[in-house]
Each structure stands twice: as C-alpha cells, then as structure tokens.
Length: 312
Image 1: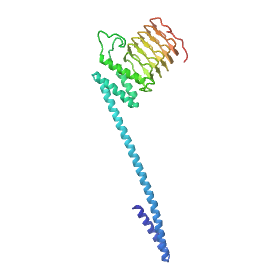
Image 2 (image 1 turned 90 degrees about the horizontal axis):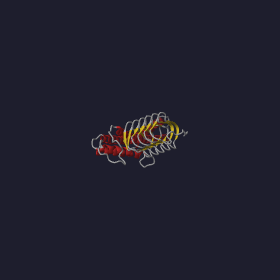
Image 3 (image 1 turned 120 degrees about the vertical axis):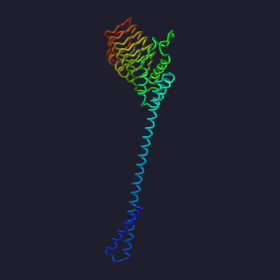
Image 4 (image 1 turned 180 degrees about the vertical axis):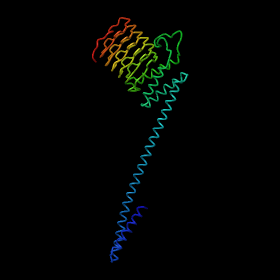
C-alpha cells in the first residue's frame, strides 16, 4: 500500500511539473504523463523492494533473538535440573541410613558422568565425606580375620569404602570412567584399606591423614607436589613405581609397617625429615632430584634406605 501511494504521488508531481512547463502540445503532455507514471511505478517498485528487505531483516533478527532466548531458557532449565539432583544427592549423604547414603554416592557419580563440568565438585564432596570424623577399625579389613569386638559403625565403613572406590575408579588413567585433571583433599581423613594404584591426579593432599590397613599407591602419577605431612600409616604401604612430578612431603609421617618406595621418581623435593619408619623402608631403584631423610628414624634394617640423589 505504501509503495503504491509513493508511486501515485511521484507520478502526480511529475505530471504537474510537465503540465505547467509551458508545453502547448497535448500529445506531448500525454506522453509526459505516461513517462511520469512509469517513473513513479519504478520508484514504487524500488521502495517496495527496500521495504521487503527491511521486513525480511526484521524477521531474521526476531528469529535469532527467539532462538537465543530458547537456548538460554534450555540452559537455565538444565542447570536447575543439575542443581536439584546435586542437592538431593548431598542430602542423601547426610541421612542416618546407610542405604540412603549409598544412593547419594552413586547419584553423584551419575551426575559427574553426565556433566563433566561438575566432576571436580563431586570429587570435592566425596573427599569432604571421607574427612568427616570417623572412629575406624584398629586394623584393615582385607585379608584379616574379623575382630571379636566391633568398635566402629560397620555400615558406615562400607559407605566409606564405596566412596574410596569411586575415587579410584574415576582417577584411574586409561580406564573408561577416567576423569582427567582431578585434585583430592583428604587432609585428616581416616582411610581404610586405601587403594589408588594406576591413578593420575592433578594435586593431592593427605596431610595428617590416618591410613588404616594396607595402602596401595603403585604406579600412580601426582602431577603436582603431593602432601603426606604428618600422615600415619598403620600397616604396610606400597608406593612402587609412583611418580611425584613436583616432589612430595612425607615429613613427620609415621609408617607402622613395611613401606616400599622402590622405583619411584620425583622431580622436586622428596622430604622425609623427622619421619618414623617402624619397620622396613625400601627406596631401591628410586630416582630423585632432591631427597631429604634428615633426622628420620629407622626401626629396622632398610635396604636402600638412603638412596643416592639422581637428577631426573
């Protein structure tokens, strides 16, 4: 409609212009009118094309905005769903019934499998659970006879063993469920029959942790400096072939059973100052940039107890 009006107005103006231009010949005026209307129609067509282009552009912008808003809404809904699942799982971990706590553990695991951005948060929650105060057994559970008197919560220890196993599953490099780039904070945790062999961790802190039962951390890689300051190992511990890329702190730790650091390597400070080895300690085949065993106490003959420093 607007284009037609423009065409008519333009033609009318041209006609008036030609009509009053002093031309006496009527046929000439008729030709002028025809020309004017032709020019007006052309201008109207151009204007109509411009309007159509503008309308199309407006529709495209509206569609893009609608798509963007739909994407934002979908993300908001997904984030809300993840938050609700996470909150429910954490609440389950605080339940006084062990089966419900088991459910919370595996709900968190499923959430991490489906949402990689949530994995470190979920690892943090598992570590926080293991750091909760717990009166563990006096000895490990695997390969030992059942104690005559149970002085700990049997159901709780099973939940904790499951949490430890989930950590191992998702820290095991090369396995289908591996979560790369994870860090663990298990300071002051009570860990029972702890296994972390074949794992790769970004960072790890076990300072003042209590390891009950045998410890297996063989062939593991710690990408950053690992902390075992003041940790207590009540049974044999095996660190064979473990790599401490930026070194480790075992200062003031206590090893109640045999400990093997055979074929380990460290790229930074490997500190055992004031560490107590109550049984045999074996460092044979290790390669360390800098090792410190100053004022360490050895309670048994230890082959390779004081290894030479080999630049890595």
